[in-house]
Length: 255
Ligand code: ADP
Image 1: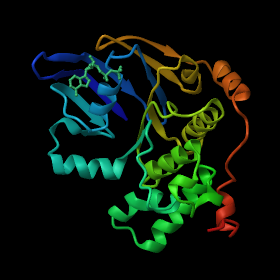
Image 2 (image 1 turned 120 degrees about the vertical axis):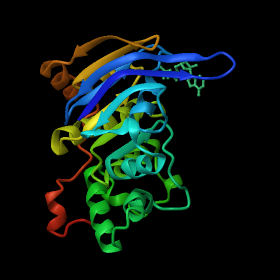
Image 3 (image 1 turned 30 degrees about the vertical axis):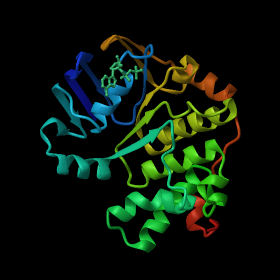
């Protein structure tokens, strides 16, 4: 799904910063990977190169069997819209629009018919546990709810890869638990591939594998065992926020 070979990023400037020094790794489809490391170690830089939000100095990135290193800017924009989803620590939602409108924007941009994008987006809003918040303005939602709108927006286009840069940084403990459980659920139920940067060690226990970055290099990796993950899921905040998605076709979803 993702293959990174000898990735290098130098920020040019008065004093050039060599933020990534020949990083190589692979991620399989459906894997939930966390990226950890001290502040300034290159985590966000790595995520930004992989998410096609920046251009690496050298190296090769293959996403979804496409060598993206050689794509033109226009092709990158198209690739992002079709195959990638983004969640950041600030939710980057549009305050004038309601929750549903924010979430369906990518499908509108892709030219879906209104009926179709409303159907898909409502399903996703139920999956993220916001069926009863569709027409709330962003300011009427809690931080955790806003982040779930952002997750729904990131996934309505059936993104092959979800990039999450410190998605829980601005959330309280309860909402951190809700968002991490949701990401885990999306991985387990939809086979969603997720790359998440975090600096909080306990968050890695929701994921399958951890890459540790130090000073622009891959330092080590750690596999999270099924037992640790199950234990973490068991002990973290435990309300199941979502209704089963099957219920939508039964007409139980409310707009
Ligand atoms: P992390 O996400 O692990 O905190 P970053 O990827 O943000 O680390 O930064 C890695 C290094 O690159 C740091 O030394 C940082 O100061 C530097 N850096 C990040 N972004 C830029 C930029 N736009 N221009 C110059 N240097 C940058």
